[in-house]
Image 1: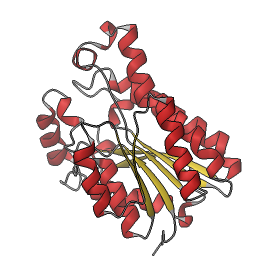
Image 2 (image 1 turned 180 degrees about the vertical axis):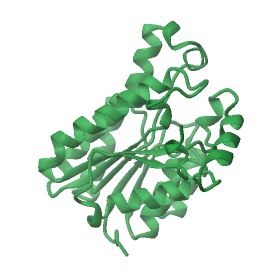
Image 3 (image 1 turned 135 degrees about the vertical axis):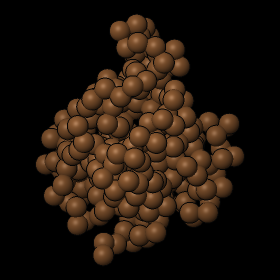
Image 4 (image 1 turned 90 degrees about the vertical axis):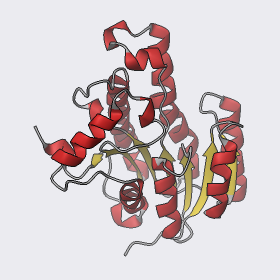
Length: 254
């Protein structure tokens, strides 16, 4: 069994105990990793800090991914406390409701730019900050969805945004591979998180996924966490650039 003892992992995107990022943080910790966990703002802190403390996170810090100063402060703390970083897990996405619920062709330029910045470019910014702390290699992961590769009703603007995220993952993997840094996109099937609750009629998608998936089971945050922990391990060092479905086989169906 792989072991992450002494491994240093940064987890960005925990909102509550149903978050995919929380499932990953739990799995990293269960395998022995030391954690840095961020919360988005003061409003989110009361929900995130108790979870981080229960996981004995060594660093708990605010991070608005659009604030360069907060990025700098976070990575300064990581460098001072650990001197290195082994794994980065990015699970951050955002779209204005009117852009998410409307037609993609009607999306405003400002709304498109905002969704791309928060959901895609923030991953690249985090990788850029993490790279100097990974001199002996490491793993960077983000979270996508099958709406990146095919049309999912009511997923709207986030489909093209996640497609860009997956493409960025492949390019980053190619660029960082020579340094021993792998880059991945985890692609869970439909599962209920706070972010998913903003998608209209998402319950219907959940029910359809459970009925049609070969396993007849929805993925859980623990399923995603287990997969992420493997990708973070040394045993997965020669795996990179992939979009990894974790969905009971739902995505293989026509």
